[in-house]
Image (cartoon, rainbow, N blue to C red; front, side, top):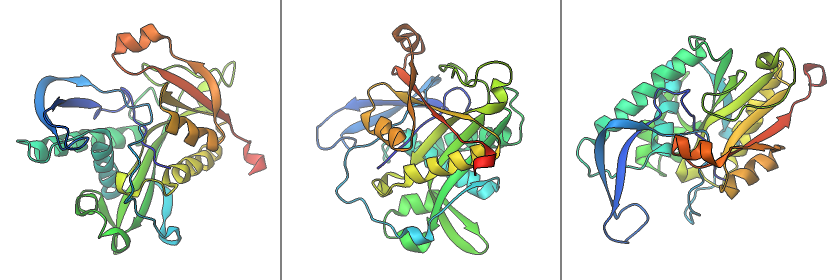
Length: 279
């Protein structure tokens, strides 16, 4: 199942400067033109986006799949590029689109490094968790994916095909706050997922489930007891993914709040994690 979840104001890269104008109904995106407009309007990224069913989605050999957290800058850069291509839609023939994509990736890359390094005071601990595959396995799938999201690990060329952030904090900016655990110390034992996405060429391979499962293990290692994720209210595929992963409904966002922030209304899903003694 495919999944892409995005971040809110926690990311410096959460800006959208694209507008899509319908011309012809040849396909979902090929008939759109892209225009760049300033100033930039923030895009809300803490909901899950699942693209349409793709008949040509590639089945992968998971024996070579690696899902782990990283602080390596070349892998963080590859993850930032995957987020840009997952959370934005571009007309490749538009003027300056490559420079714009690079600009967005650079902003996300710098924001990721700051969050992981503990330079954002609203976060206690942040981890970037990536799913990667050897370049040789998917080189025939998408030249763009392999070129933009490639990194080298111990001499092997690999590609980031899925990514998310695990954020240990009391709350995320502009988002519904989780209710668990109650009392003092909620910022120590509570965490949120954000920026979850999977390369569109590899949807329906369970990669979203894999990176969420890894995030739960990492969170347990931090002593997290309660894990949350925000999902767009009408995003049924995303909700199915998280419920498959054990999340349940806790709260929903007031409609007025979503209108005020000019974004889709969200719900908040929760899962309780066993203590480290149970690992």
